Image (cartoon, rainbow, N blue to C red; front, side, top):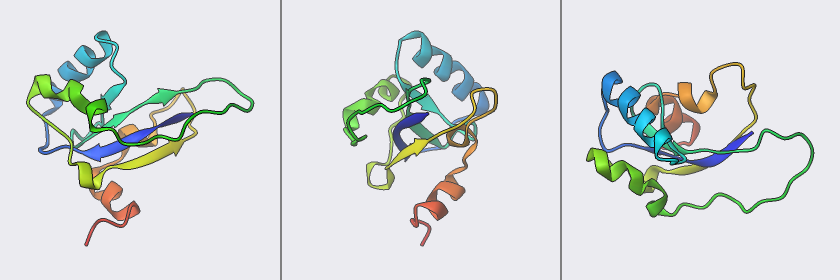
Amino acid sequence: MSTGIMAPLNRKITDTEREEWDEILYAQGSNVRLNYEGTMAYTDDVCDEYGIYFDKMSTLEQKQFDDLKQFGIHIIVEHSRPYREYWYNGADSDHDMMTLEEFLVITKQNS
């Protein structure tokens, strides 16, 4: 299960930027990741255990995305939304595959 915050980026990044920056973020121990389309960033607090667990609700703190500043990009705070997703670890997650357009429609921000 993953929980966190999803937010659009201020600009679309290239596939090369996304791949390189995702590796850098991972190596730095950041929990910020970038979607496949290169249009959104998200925090990913993963729980791989079955059973019940209690945790705090995801809340937006803009500083959670400060790791993106090193690449000259930032999130659009007013469009960010918390998410919770249960997914099979042997497949790509919905939060990785989601496009910006899908995100805006699902969160009713597409008007």
